[in-house]
Amino acid sequence: MSIWITMLGMAAVTFLLRASFLVLPPGMKTPPLLRRALRYVPAAVLTAIWAPELLFSGGALAISLHNERLLAGAVAIAVAWRWRETFATIVAGLLALHFFDWLL
Amino acid sequence: MPFDRSAVAAGVRGALPVLLGIVPFGVITGVAMVASGIAPLAAMLMSVVVFAGASMVASAQLLASGSPEALVILATLFVNLRFVMYSASMRLHFAQAPLGWRLLIAYLTADNVYALILGRYADRPDDPSQLGYFLGAGSLIWVAWQLAVLAGVMIGAGVPAAWRLEFAAPLVFIALSVPFLHDRASIAAALAAGLVVIAAHDLPFRLYIVVAALIGIAAGLACERRTA
Image (cartoon, rainbow over all chains, first blue to last red; front, side, top):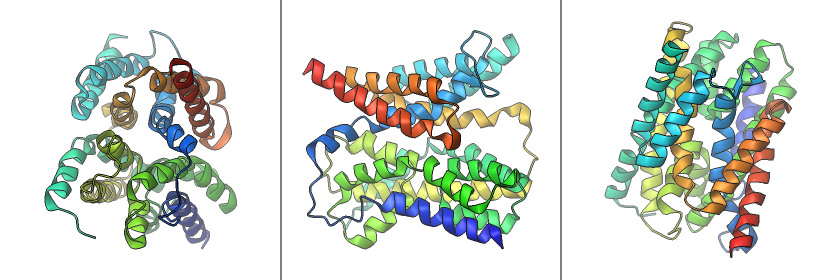
């Protein structure tokens, strides 16, 4: 029984967050400061999602040359910066991960 | 609400490379949910009604450790708080669409779709083709995600860990975020967010994402003001 309540709660919470601003009346203006602040949301949020996967290992900070995920991530960032291709970035990152895994 | 087919096709094409990261992440999410003791049917239903991978992985971990429902729902709230910011962003693009379309857009707004729309339409939020683009990209990602979760639910723990496909998830986010680093202010926002992640990583429920976002945004605005 409890899994259904949990599921319903999760679904409601998630949808309300997604709908929050979108359901406001169309006539309402977005304040200029909010509009400017929103420009930095993708850079900040998307970075905060991937950064821990590279910087942490088993819950501990792992900024070292022995962290193969950090090295592979650096390769992926370089590829993304140079070519801006999602496919190339993912393939390069996975290959680099296996390479550094084998090397270290 | 009219939208042209070529825009839908462009959205589908735009989302194709992104599937390379979504599919492994979906499979991993399905595996994690079943491994935490959720019945396969319930796991699949959850994937459809919640449709937010990171929060489902987090919930699976909490459910496996016997956490109460209220805590799991609260964790979902925090992990998904970023959707409020996405919603505010999407409003700049879709405020004029009828309410029904906006509700559908809200449901389909995921990290990848959001990044695709911003990557293409950030400079022209009034472009009429973006509804079609959103629906093309959003539907393809939705279908691919559900099939991937289904595969994960069915194979359970059968994916060889040696493939290290779990690393595809952060790689998608790297690929999506780097194109946004196009000026000093957005690089400052990303760097500040990264530093906050290091400092605040121990906060419960992935709250560091919200803190990093707020401080990153503040850093971007501060940098913009100084150079302006």
